[in-house]
Every structure is written in C-alpha cells, then in structure tokens.
Length: 280
Image (tube, rainbow, N blue to C red; front, side, top):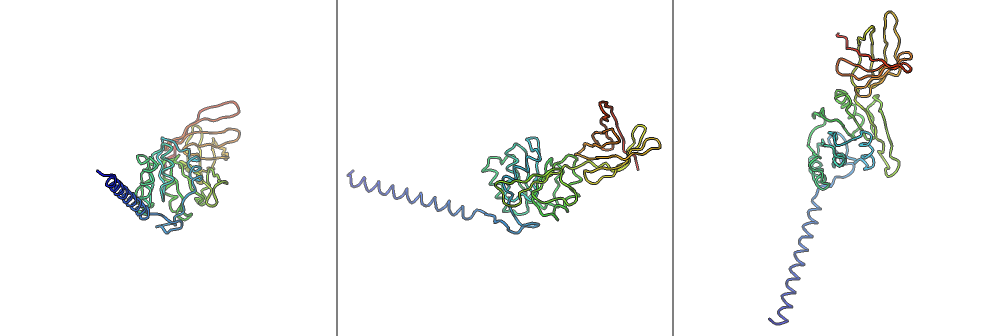
C-alpha cells in the first residue's frame, strides 16, 4: 500500500472519529437541554418553590440529630436535597412532592449522589399522606400550610422530631431554633419541635391527685394531697418525658399511654412516683 493511500485512510479515520465525537457532544448537549430545570419561584400546588440553602439543610438535620436509625420524611421535597442529605447520614428518607417533574429530578439527583437505595421520592398530596412512621419530619412550607398540618403532626408518636425552615407553627413555640449567618442570605432559620405526649386531665397518684392542663409542650395544674392543693410550676413535656415542680420537689418521669412514672427529687433525696390516668 502506498504512503498516499495510508495517509488517505488515516485522514478518513480521523474525520469519522471527529464526526462521532461531535455527534456524542451534540446528543449530550441536547439531553442536558431537555433535562428538567426547576426555576426558583415557580408555582406549585400549595407553595412556590424556593430551595432550602444547603447550610440550612445541614443545620435542620443537626437540630433533629438525624442518624442512621431514623426514617425522615420531607414534606414538599422539591429537588430532593434534604432527603439526599439525610440519606448521606445513613438515614432512610422519603420525599413527598406533588410535582412529577421534581420527583423524577430528585430520583436522578439521589442516584448521582449514590444514595438511591436510601432516598426515595413519591408524587403525593401532603394532606392525603400518612407520615406516622417518620421519626423526623422536615419542611419548608408556608405558615398557613404548617397550621393546617399541625393537628396531624400533634397526633404523631410522642418524641417525633419536626424541623421547619423559617416558618413557625403558630402559637406552638419551637423547642429550639438556630440561624445561619454565613453563606445564607434569606430563609436562614431552622426551627425545631418535639411532638409532646398528651397529658391533659386527671391522674391518680398514691395519696394524691394530679390535675394537668396542657398547651402544646407546656403543662400547668395542681397536685392535691388530702385537703390541700398545690400548683405545679415549670411543667413541660419533651416528647414522652414530663417534668414539673411542686414546692421544693421536682418530678421527672415518662408517660406511656395512660400511665406515667419517674423520680421525685427533694434536695439530696430521691423517691419513685407513678400515676394512672383517671377514667372519664
């Protein structure tokens, strides 16, 4: 074969390789162009979409102390960033999102982040979804949506942790909050609640009667012993944990259904106590 012929074959091979490379690049560019790209402020079913700042996502997960033993549900999961961040901490996580394009994008993002086995996404309506199995719930919704969801949230298992980006739960005050001051320009506060056990009512103790009134995690009431009745102070629920003071005695305990039991601390002395919910 002559040198001229070899050169022509080499040129042809090079040209074909260049054409193939160009076709691949064009196909990739077309695929990128067609990939769904959400726009900040776009309309959704209940809210417009604004992504949670990545630093705020991490702070929300820190406040909730998310670990590999948790099952997190993100309400209105958008592009999936909170679910993916939780999955990277080892948790099982589920995103509830009404926009099917967002759901598809989230699944792609989870696979790209190599957490597709722990991060799941479904198209669903927040108000028609059962999230009672969650140990942690995260959200970035509007105040009126939070209030609509609040009764359902308060019916969750005591101890369930709730975190919201920026928006409150009305008069249900947050147990804790934290604001990111660096790397975040707007919507930079994480608010944290623990679902309290429901204890309002009358409880029978040995030699006494405890009557409680409850406003979310805050508890007030009286302890009756014989003919005397003493108001309790500092009453508070932290999930299923109850604490209050009567005089110089501090009561701490755990609520389990219609019973509670724990320890009374008076100075250096500790004694046990228990109570049962009075039937109506």
